[in-house]
Image 1: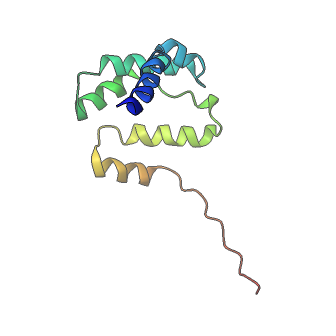
Image 2: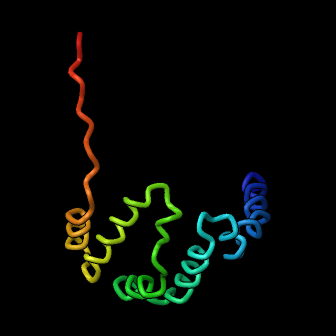
Image 3: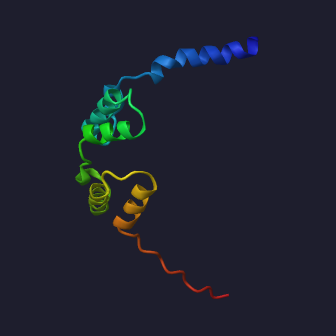
Length: 114
């Protein structure tokens, strides 16, 4: 019993640190405005489930700012693919995204010289 008391007390004392506000969490994000919008969208759509929740989140979220990403061209290609595939779900959505996104170039293997 005593062996469980110490870890349980540690967990309970750390809860306030884990329950930081969305503003604190988003202050250190790469794109704080988008992070805050995402937190608000999650809060607004919390009571919904599956397709209804997905539609709510898509409607509530602003588009990604591709200028802040490491690879703006790839980001823009992904955004175009998402726009083309909007409204599809499940396997149909996955197939559409796979077909619309540009493929990464595969590196040719060098023949081994043994």
